[in-house]
Image 1 (spheres, protein in one colour):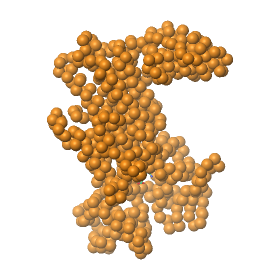
Image 2 (spheres, rainbow, N blue to C red):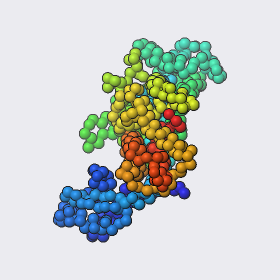
Image 3 (cartoon, helix red, strand yellow):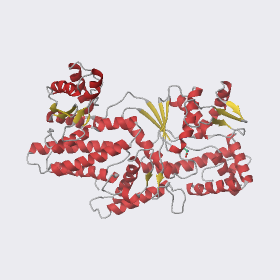
Image 4 (cartoon, rainbow, N blue to C red):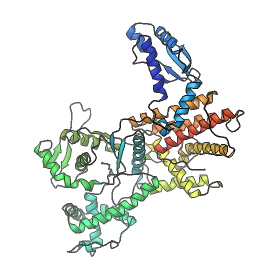
Length: 585
Ligand code: ARG
């Protein structure tokens, strides 16, 4: 029977410790276990006697001796030793470990402990219309998707919102450019129309057009004037421009959707900057009326500096004299909109760390205005993807690398790796799966705020700290289980005997805590580290403990169950990273 567990191994041991401390008349706040510093000493250790010694004025070894005497009565513990000044080393009993493993094997989600559900909106991806997804979007997509899965697995209601950059001057630039080149398009006529198929542009054309338009505007003030005028007309609702804008947005979004699909990234809502523009005039009136925003040199600003600031905190500009839409104003209006639409408890913005100041200002302004009451706003920033020189990744021509180039680099390398593997039926699908795992794992295995070097060769390797290494471990365990079932050998009751079995059970049992911690820190790298370590622990187990070749049938059945447990946990962990495990590789 499967069930949701509500206790991790660590929390169960902590309950035992608390009871022992209480029985000794001691306060229980230091009755906590941590993994043992050395496996020879035990499975877990409790360092709680030392801090108590100070407050109680008793020698720590005395306290430890009292507690240890109680603990030794418990069937869950095989041995309890005191070391050094008063460390209590705990070795769990084989029967207890076996029951922990059995329970985890039967539990939903490999024992993930559910939390009181919150509504959490995750703002990630953030591509801009008419621009290809580039290397910076990779991190937002990969990290955002992982956070969405982690928080969802803990029982939260997550809302993934792509927050398209689909409004503002960039749109005006593009419209002005199109008007210049194709003045006869029916959307520019007195009675504008834009039947489907009339616009002679695909995504590739738009992607060329936009940089050309931007360059022209930069070089010639007259062109910039036209772009501004087009932006203003669009924002005022010019029907022909609106038709054109909608068509461009659709072309872009269709292309970007394909990128999302190939990355296996999912959104619940595809809203954008344009969707909140109608809220802005009323919002500005409100901010003015309540003096939250004040005039300053012809512009409207919100002061957000606080006395405790250690760094300069400029006021947030919410309206310029020309009334153009601003990034910050749009973000502020988006908070209002989300509060109405989704009423989230939290909004997590998965956006480049270089936008940290922007978000700090927007969050303070939102709270000051009372727009984010009851909403925890958090910027989960990330560092840059770097080239071999350690500087932000560029193409060979020196341009910003496009996402699809990175993906095809990794998939090409993966194809080389898996070539000649005659066991798989669809080598191309395998190359894609390995390439994606390589990219995602490389991205997620460093802490989000650090940058990392994009090295396609290294990341697709089957050795070392890589996605394919962990995938391979899962596949290998899968084939052990398949071979067993061919021979009619099935998993059975778990017994824990050999040191490598003990280590494997203990490592598997950590999974729920790792997921809880990764969620608390919005740090998928904790899960990446964990699955890599577990794959290594398994590898040691497999070297030391024959499974199919085990002498006793009961031992074989138990080890098969440990294989199944490990595979569950690894697959579950990889799923939280957005990584799929292939059937064979
Ligand atoms: N479109 C923006 C960019 O490419 C990212 C949007 C991030 N989300 C937000 N709510 N500002 O930089």
